[in-house]
Image (tube, one colour):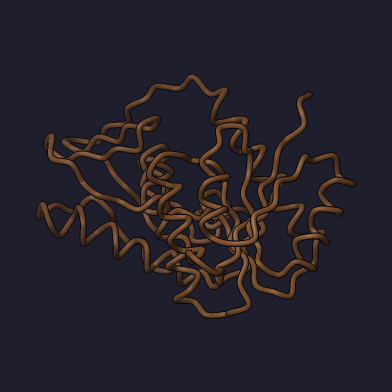
Length: 228
């Protein structure tokens, strides 16, 4: 199997070097960038399999690096930050990060999250399922990350898209918050399950409320469901 290449975008040299040694030991190839602009350039390279991206960077912030990379690439991104605030987590996930860890962290946990994302990326690339999911006039194009209602484009963030995709794949099934967290955010997400309610509100404002439909239903005390 080909070695996976990990890009570390981190301005603290000791942390970058520590991660490089740990990743090398685990069999990964490693690239390092010590500022946001260098990270952006290296992050656009096609042979990068996963990016470890610090939030606070010189020259260009981690948020902006992530935002620009997401314009052309779906490479898995794990954001690192010294802050422990729900707004930072939501911002990072909204602009396309796949996961989020707060410093200080256990490298074993980081490695576990990396394995999950790399496995998910491999499965996605080798999955030949139908590209389009449909419920009434709502269409979701899995491979191109597009959503339309009655042929009108709906702008969704990456995490909103993944949540809607999971619910449409499981239409007519009541999904608990815990199950949604497991499948959309990953089994090792340790945040508050209230983040599900936040993203459901986002989807409702962009779909249900905008087009005056009742697509996403709340099952009180259990979770959510999308019905045909």
